[in-house]
Length: 58
Image (cartoon, rainbow, N blue to C red; front, side, top):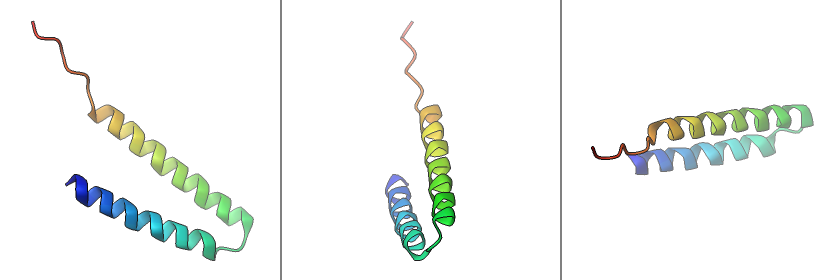
C-alpha cells in the first residue's frame, strides 16, 4: 500500500507542477501554492497521528 501511495503522490505532484507552469497569472499560482501547502500539512498531521509511540512494557 505504501508503494501505491508514493506512486500516486508522484503522479499528483507532476500534474500539480504541470498546472502550475501552465497558469500565467501570479494570483492563481499563489492559490496553487497555498492549496499544495495545505494538502502537505494535512498529510503530515495524519502521518503524525498514525505513528503513535510504543507504550512501555509493564
